[in-house]
Image 1 (tube, rainbow, N blue to C red):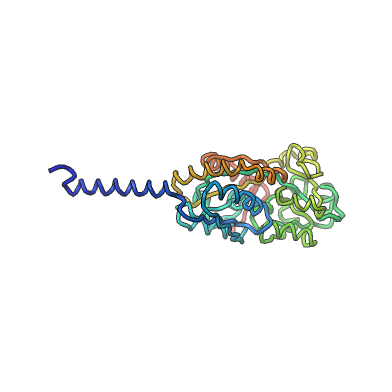
Image 2: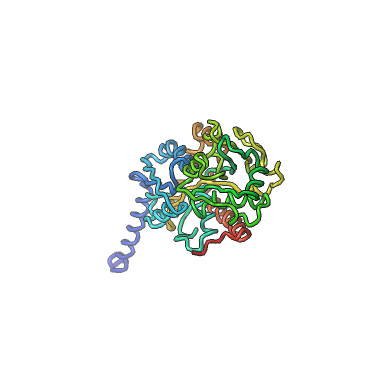
Length: 329
């Protein structure tokens, strides 16, 4: 009698067969369309980036990408939808600086942590710009801060605990507004597009958001940029840099866009996304679109992305503590 005539032998064969089946299943991924969750509304930086990459990424994947805006709670609603999905690569998230560094740093009761996700890439870095509606009586950061100190001022964001929320308070604090997080009136909206609309219709005085979300409004003459958070000027934004205004520390205020799946996403799936994103991000039309809005295209590996995001989290956690913006409830 050989080993394979025994129960142990049959068990070994069964385990081996299961392993081969798993490998085969991963090798065939993806066999169907992939759901891509955008956790912010139409017109914001995340939506713009996701829509711009969708065509070349779909070509690289070889299956349809079903794009869905699942908004609310500063990106948390869409993030939770992916957190709770099966980690098989068929439900993925366009994660953002707000949803995965700022909100975790600010919100004690956020229904997820960074450990609930596996990032397969960060592919876009973009600076912030602060802007007002065209025709506003505010024409410079000096005038904005002067109004904040004398009459009070309001700023819009894509939600409580979002990158835009922290960004507005951070900028005002840097320019000397005492207790900026509470002195200025924060007006949260459902997404970055709605935050820009709030400034355009006079609901809010200004916003600080990614250049990619403002580029169209600036080019059309609807909004006036007052500052960009870069060391060098941004093409299309006739505004001084934070460094030129004496605040180089604001250069750490940047946005990013990445793609993540639920925790437990297999290594083989993550590796496929790394290859797909390298191909998609090289697309000339995508690069032209995003770079025209001031974005820097930099495709990170899964390992690099996870390290980068955790480092960003530590930076923003320190800022939240300094500004007293921790949300406990």
